[in-house]
Image 1 (tube, one colour):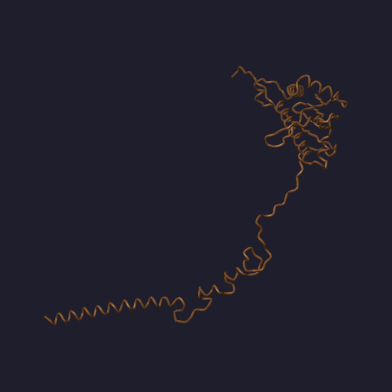
Image 2 (cartoon, rainbow, N blue to C red):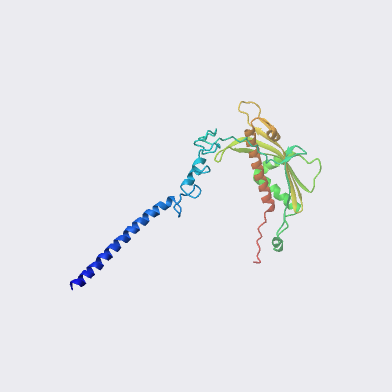
Amino acid sequence: MKKILFILLSILTSYTLVYSQSWDNQDDSWGEQDDSWGSDDDGTQSTDNENGDDSWNDNESIDDSWTEDDGGDFNFGGSGDYVRSARPETKARPYQRFTSMPYDSSSQLITYMEVVEVIVPERFLDLGGDDYSLSDSLYQRALVWMQTKFGKREAKSMIDAAGIDPDGKEGQTIKAYVNMPLAVQLNEYKKVQAGIIKFDMELRFKDERYRYKFNNFVHVSKSTNGKPDDVTYMEYYLNAKKNTRGNDQILIACNNHMNNFIDDLKTTCAATPFIDDDDW
């Protein structure tokens, strides 16, 4: 019995020694792995190109590039002349003149002119409506438009001021010497009166079309010191070298007024009358 116990005790002791030795071998392997970072598998030292840590010391390394004297933006160690300014340099753009006025190079006058067609919808004629695109009808519409816009007495005065067309008439014609107030837009919220503008108006009518022509523009501004009113041809504002911004304000205001004036004329001549049709 004692012999059996002795044998078991010997086996247990041997197993304990073997197990302890295996832990010692594992600890040694960790040490070998630490050494492998600086050496190859055969125990030799790695070259500069093969070792990642040593490659930071190469001539083409990233650290050395910070000190190259190439005048770059990040030249901390170099002697470049570059100096980073606190605020980018700004340059004022030259003033751009207003160039949208319709200018007739042959007459050298500001001239608004267009031939406008008037097409009556077929449905309107099918319902028994009168053809309002005939010259007589267009003439009457334009005359009513003038009387509505300026008043009957003022419209008649403008037509009389123009006189009879010395060149004869081409179909129905309305000639007038128009004057209306001029308002200058100083900014988004403020307008000021800047005198009046005067111009020649000619409307010629044919069947299904008419032609408008506005030219000979004159700007009349009130004098504040008791002197006669200032009278300036609009073409002067186009070519004057002094006070260009003030001149452009007058030109822009005139152009806006004339565009609205023409739009009203077109709307009146193209409006389809209402038909009270019982057959519905």
